[in-house]
Image 1: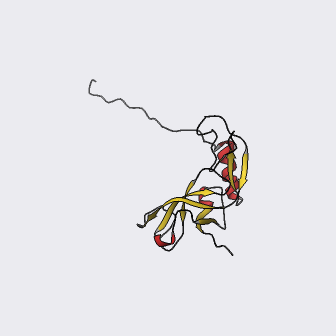
Image 2: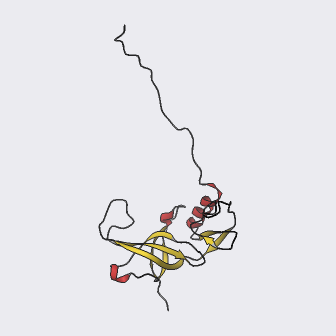
Image 3: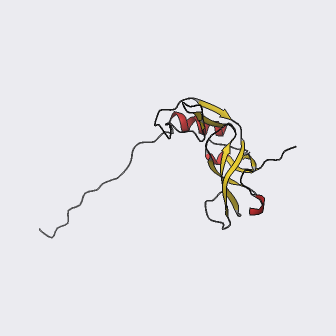
Length: 148
């Protein structure tokens, strides 16, 4: 009997779903509608993408603000190696983009022909997917803004 192995069937599961919450949910809904949202801090500055809490003070944030879909490149790097699950099937720039009206930057891909087409400070505009679902990938990428 001492050598007998005891066993019992067991299923490990996590029977719950997680919601995005009121802030991230509003941001993603905005993206689905082709709108970029930020959130205002007590000092009047705007965080984009929005967060539920002030990154410096920890205070709850609730005042969503509509922003443009244009901005400027604060910093960037060239991604020359094509990898699985990246936003493009060719080399591209990965940039910190400060959306107009925001005081922080978001990380996203920029579609340009090569690193010589990128520069810190350059103006960019979102290229939206034709079919959107409420995901950061609803912005297909940013591209250089063409000024008249």
